[in-house]
Image 1 (cartoon, rainbow, N blue to C red):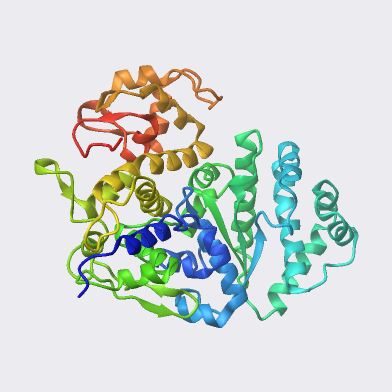
Image 2 (image 1 turned 180 degrees about the vertical axis):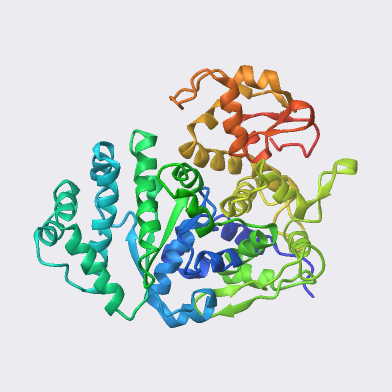
Amino acid sequence: MKKALSDAERKKLLEDLAYLPTDGDAVKDDPKWFLPLRSHERALRPETLVVRGERGVGKTALFHFLRHLRERGPELSNAFPFAASPATWLEGFSEGIEHPNRMVLEKFVEKGTNEELRLFWFAHLCGRLSSSIGEPLPEGAFRTAWSERLNEPDNWVPEAGRELGKLSAWLDGLERNDATDRVVTYDNLDRIDVSDPESRRRFTGSLLALWLSLSNRYKRIRSKIFVREDLFQAAQSAFPDASKLDPRSVSLDWDVESLYRLLIKHMANRSEELRAWIDSGINRVPLQRVRGLEWTPPDTLPEEGRPSQKAFVDHLIGPTMGKGVKKGYTHRWIPNRLQDARVRIVPRSMLALIRNAAEYACRSGPGATNLRILTPVELQAALEPTSKRRTAELKEEHPVVERLEALRELTVMLPRAEVVKRLRRPSGTDDGFGDDGERVLQELLHIGVLDERTGGRIDVPDIYRYAFGIKRKGGVAHPH
């Protein structure tokens, strides 16, 4: 049995890891990067209208996979039995060219009433169904306006309002006469960058209100709306009966086992050399090749044993981080550093941590020995860029996160009163919180960026702490 990697072999494995895909957009090009989970099964149930979660949790990856499912039907239905149904999936909204331009939408949303926004979504649904399935819209001004001026909702939305009865009857006819179940998907709603956050919430809320109403009328025509958690929560008070959305939604959450399985899948499909390394040695993880999904890890990966999370990480990095009484198990250290205050980890952070560690090793010179690819020092060095990336993503959704800059160079845990005082300082951009430090604190606690411990002490999870240079006593020394 081979006992050590050569320098050339380790360098090749590190270079492959340094190009590990970390975004859900990778699934857009190839479904092999997608890992089916039980939460996906719940998301694809007919009664589920909304698939929600923070950025990086995998909403877009699932959305792209459904497109592959639509195009490659039987092949992926066998690989992904949760979706093995006669339904036809079609794209209701994304950033594609079949939809109105983003800037056009922003202008329309800013001046449109709630009634006009809901009518926009209804008209857009009819137009998308017609073009996707080849069923002509009813004759009239709306059909002409839709076909000629997709990027001018100011023209076709009023026409849809005047022909609402005719369009509703057309949709009723599809429900009665079409034997195919059709699922309309919506994504990228958070990328409509209207200047007023309230306009964005109304835009999303009007879509949710429409489909909550339609779901009571139609069974063959259904939707899957992929939406950010904060936009979903805002919609809960946006219209009557909004509370009925909650039981018809699924949150995409990842447990540690699933995160490690995803990492293994990405590594195995990145290169033949990485696949062979995973499936070698006493800590090997057996892989299976699934048609459509390519190399896939075992269905279960317990914390300990063989194969297991611990065995895999021991093989990749080594069993412990640090030395003496400060040392901890590496397979636990990783998720502990990536979770927020609500114990949530997004898969993008797990993949980015390993990718960043490999990039550091390539720059500084590999330090691993035997069959390992990475070292604890390289992993520790990857925390800061991983933290910066995750923080940048969150700031796009919640600009108030920038207020953590006021805590730079401080050492947690911090007295609550001091944190409130420092958070009163507005950040460079208008985040809507003014100089109300207590309100800022409550918001940061709510989104998991800060954690309030016993006695009112405030902690900052490592996944955000490193991005702002906030210190912590003890732990593994950060490499310079």
